[in-house]
Length: 101
Length: 164
Figure 1 (tube, chains in turn blue, purple):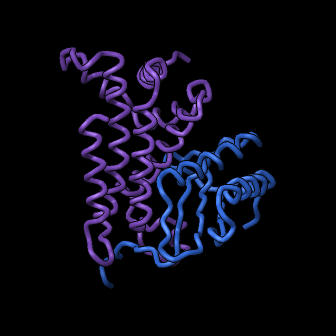
Figure 2 (tube, rainbow over the protein chains, first blue to last red):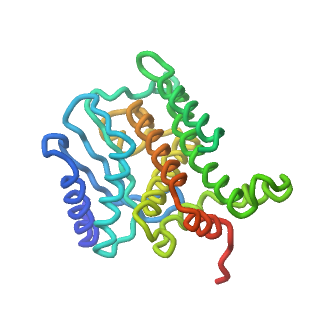
């Protein structure tokens, strides 16, 4: 997918803002993608992939991360909301509820 | 903290920890949704307590409690003329994040796209549900720490309509 200039700038500032919050070894990589929220408003989907298996971020760390990303976006006059998810290797995912074929 | 809110957060934690081994989607979905509703009802209580008061009759208290709308609250909490302090900004950020995840938890049967990319068929992981519950606790804590003038301003803005 080719990103617009605006999206490229958003990706860069969000990644920079989040990386500044954590030790370098904490984060494996970060995905930032243009998205829409539940009301159809333009938003950003930010997924932070952690390095350590089953490491869990606290609610305060999640809030710090959203705040850092949102503040960085506002500084470039991008008012999309960054919805942030942390994922770690071997996280306990829920059962798959799709019926068997 | 209003006891109803505290108990909802406790229920959310219990749901998130309920299943040994691989958690049930139903448990994690209800945990995330309950965490959001704890924060939403904390906002509703702030509005009714500030603008009416617990000592007033239900016929005055309840309509203000129920006047807060989900979507409008999310937008209002991010407005720069309301979110004038770091705490108020963080309250808005937490509310928006939780509202989005609650929407998925309650209405969407699919894995979230960003999770699907990791071959994870789950809408939520247990870790994520626990983190979101703590996020709701953080936000309720912010609400509880607001000064009286900030609580009154917040309540007024969440309930009152602005003429366009």
